[in-house]
Every structure is written in structure tokens, then in C-alpha cells.
Image (spheres, rainbow, N blue to C red):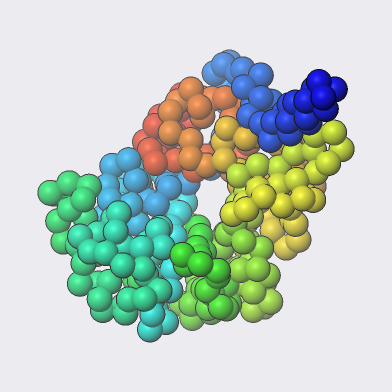
Length: 292
């Protein structure tokens, strides 16, 4: 009996090591500002400047540009009546004064909600914009990184194609980028034929004991597909220098999320990443200026 118990504990230990290996590898790395002198990097404003303004609103996007972002990142869902709405969660509960699933609400119902007051009274009356409003409003001033989300269950049918068509409609292929955790959306966007750059989001990816696995919106065995994508964007605590180097050898960039402090930025930049996705573009810009 003891033999079986010890064997079981051994398997559990191996499983835990396999699961936590990316975090362990990340924590073993240490970098200082001297390691990254003169390094340039891309600053991506996460949901605009989510540390300074209500996420995914025009106020947040404008703030990100003001604070030095090269790219603004946003999230897209689809309303009940087929409109592309810029909001992160599958429901309006957290970031508006309403409640309900995006996929069960019309565009007008969502637009009637206050998407700013939850962050601060100064932002009262901010609305959840449509993707078209953002594209027209930004008009190539900076690049726009569009993350395609999913409803509370399953995926939105054909949303990758719809987003690509919206970008094409406004002639924004040169300065819009599409990213997602789900490869199906990226495949749909690629199949549209509009040549919009694509990026793949991942939580982690590793090979421990020769068993590759990756985690995006679920755990999957095998390497994540990099077909048609130009960048692999990981959760910043799940990367290490060897992983970044491997992707660079594949011709891919790595831009981790969500990197909010100077120390975190120095650490991942020391691993060789090409940029950071951050709630605080001003913090990233201050560091970039210091490195010049």
C-alpha cells in the first residue's frame, strides 16, 4: 500500500512541476536596467490606459496616446443584433451601470449604459464604443491591436471574419492588428484575405519531460499553432529568455501582458521581449527614455 501511495505522490509531484514550470523558470531569471541599456521596445496601452481611465473607452484610448503608447489594445464582443462592441468581459456587469450578457443585449441597450462612472466620477457618461468608432476616431494616429473575445459559452460564429471585414471597410489594414487566444478567430481573419497582421495570445507554453503543452483559453497538449501569426503574446510571469529566443528564431516577436511596474518591465525586457502590454504607458515611456 505504501508503495502505491508513494507512487501516487510522485505522479502528483511531477504533474505540479509540469504545471508550474513556466513560473519557476520565470522566477529564476533576474535582470537589471544595465542589462537593457539602449534597448528600444514597443509600448502597447492595455485597453487604452486602463490604469488612468475606464478601460476600453475613447477616454482611455486618448489617454494612452497622450502618455506615449505606440499601440492601443482593445477587446471586441458582438451584440445580440450583430454589432461589434468594444468591451472586455462577456457581460456588462463590471464596467457599466447595467447587467447582462453582451450576446443577449442589443447595441442600443449597451450604448444606453454608463461605462465610465465605475472608474471615477470624472468619467461619468463615457460609453462603450463600437469598433468602427474607435477605428474612425484613431484613424492611424497609432496602431490598434484588436483582441477578439468569446461569449459566456462557446465562440461567436464567424467573428474573426467580421472583425477583419470591419477593418477592411475603413481601409485600416496597415495600422490594425488582430489577436486572440482562440486560433479559430485568427484562422477566420486570415481566410478573409485582407492581409491584416495577426498575433496569438497565450498564458503559457512549455515542454517539460518532452511533453509539450500550451494554455490559452484552456489547457491543450502540443505546441500552440504559430501559422500566419507575427507575434506570440504571453502572460508576463510565464515566459523566460529561452522561450523568447526560440520564438525569435522562428521569426516571431514576443510582447507579454500585462506588465505594469518598472521592475516587471526590466525583467521581461532582459529576457529579450520586443515590447510590453501595460495599463501604464507612462511608466513604460519613462523607462524607454531612460534607456536611450
